[in-house]
Image (cartoon, rainbow, N blue to C red):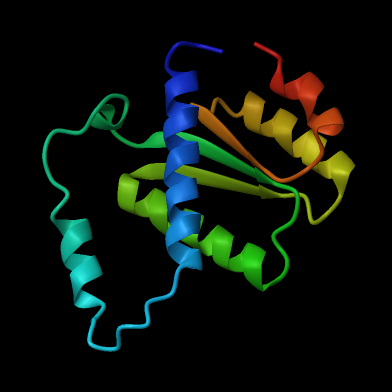
Length: 133
């Protein structure tokens, strides 16, 4: 893996994890409005770090399953976060087929993505492909 892919993968994973944590929390304060969140997101200005400073970053999201409320919300949140960060996100959904997820992982590797996020799945199925340089 190149020197850029490891930090980018870590950054992508951290972003998606933060999104998951934010999506799972619920506010009980009825006086809060959604305007605060929009203001916070738009206030994030300044010089972008590499590789984001060079335009859209290509990231592949290889999912074992995208079905069900949780996974649909997770996927929609990942897409929204990717859009907000200027990430060109390609989503592969194996639809609970382990062999398809392994094929999707190979496709993601061959696509030239700068980072790959593997969502769920089974390590024995994906490890030969994920350890490939």
